[in-house]
Image (cartoon, rainbow, N blue to C red):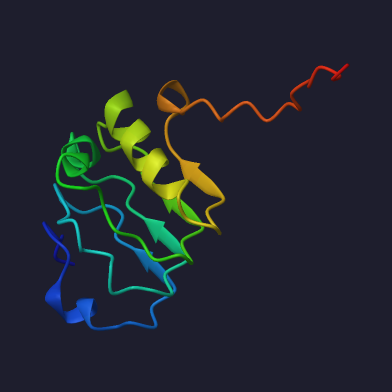
Length: 123
């Protein structure tokens, strides 16, 4: 089977796509709008590619555009930096249904502090 180096044009017009597995390829980058047309995309698997600096660079051009249905993204074994993961996580956290980002433990972003804040009583 041929390995991909970029997102194939043939799948760009499949708007109803819900799960996309592009693992074990040679993909190095995505343009800002690579996933924009996939408005129903829920799960994106990009494991074992070559996405070094891909997400950190994407933030300089406005970040990657994901649809509001995105829930799970897997990017393990891509040689990512903490800056890449932080950029991707920040973009995904804007999506209402986002649930999980699979990445190497050493790169995992710190979840926001969700403990209740104590509010002092007004006198």
